Image 1 (cartoon, rainbow, N blue to C red):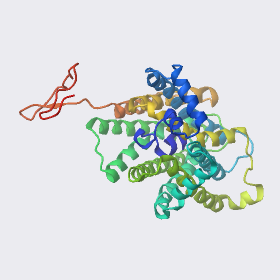
Image 2 (cartoon, rainbow, N blue to C red; image 1 turned 180 degrees about the vertical axis):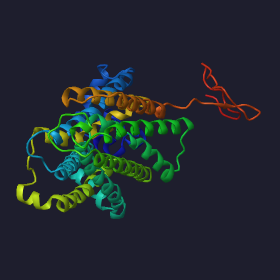
Image 3 (cartoon, one colour; image 1 turned 60 degrees about the horizontal axis):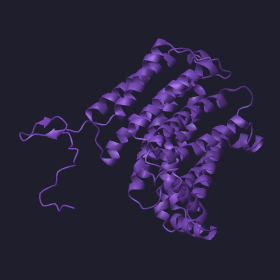
Image 4 (tube, rainbow, N blue to C red; image 1 turned 30 degrees about the vertical axis):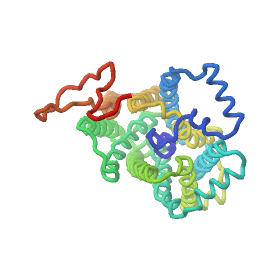
Length: 396
């Protein structure tokens, strides 16, 4: 999904910078002249990064919440239903076009751009082939997301989908050798408890619209939705960590990697479409039952991740945690008015646990010092005149 941020480009270390870095890297003289003029006029000041933090917060909240709500509406609205497998393919096509356009802005002329893309994509086929693994997993994840959102309310899906934090943490430990703090382990336990409380309420009801507390036109199976969202979270965690590992071990840009990812995702998506809906698509057409809601959902999936990749440079872990928490709250409130969703005490308790766990997981650990006896002490206050010079270090 796009809420994964251009295939887990949420980690600012895997992005090549924000919007300004992209503009500065452009070799087009008119673009650079416009940027220089803007800087001279004071358009970029010392408070620009601080302002971008709040702008990033709004963008992340709106993107996270609106995508889920739009997907839910598209899958439950009355009338003929579009094929979700074709929507997955179209999202990857638009994402491929978007990444190509970004790279074209960084090179003068179509010839230079095509030469760069050819050397990156086909110069080392085995390196490009690495992206087939996460592409396969992401194709599975995106298709399962449609299954889950078709059988769970928007609010329930939004809360349950936060299990991807747990799966990403576990795969980071297994595949990257990362370690997490004791507080983060506690937050993961609270996350699991909160999701369990929400899902126990959902699966404890009937398999109709009452199971989600919504008035819907289609039959639903909450248990199938739960299985789909859990497998989707596992897929998201594995593919995201694998993608991060590939990025850290190569010099290719994140945009080139996403082009490779989208290319393989399109091929695998077409195979999935032909396997599941081949006969129906041949009879009714690829764009059967597409409407403005369908296209909005596809565009948000495709370009939402690119947007997140640009603004996430200015968002730290705490800000991203707040954005996720606010998006959950916004999804719940919007579901009440849009889908007649009924918030119960058990759902509110589980959602609160999930929001609190997200805050704990993103909270930075307090730095500690070690005393002469080897015991950990309180954080050391840094002198206002700057850190002291190490022995043998040259002064200015």
